[in-house]
Length: 72
Image 1: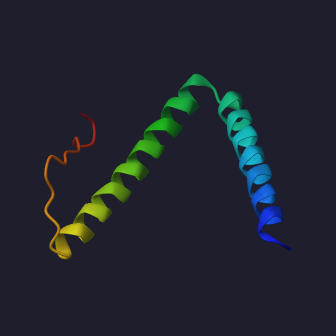
Image 2: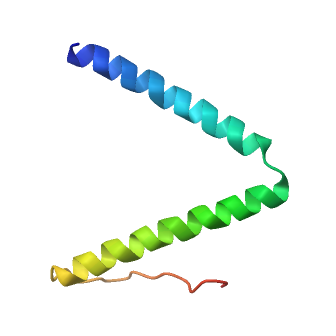
Image 3: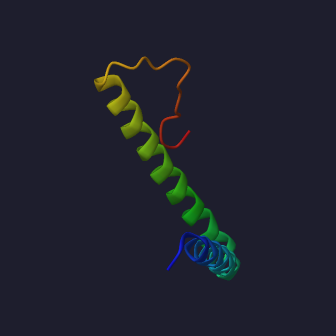
């Protein structure tokens, strides 16, 4: 398999992933969608906080970084 084939396969799988994601989101009730979106925000926020902690531990300054508390 060459690089061009891998790139084509990657593009095809990205399109399939997007299609499946849209189908999944469209299948949710409004309440389920709200819960799912809140869960995704929490997951993204946790990843951001972990990245910031790692940056601090490596001596990188955190300027202008801000995250709301849960429930705000």
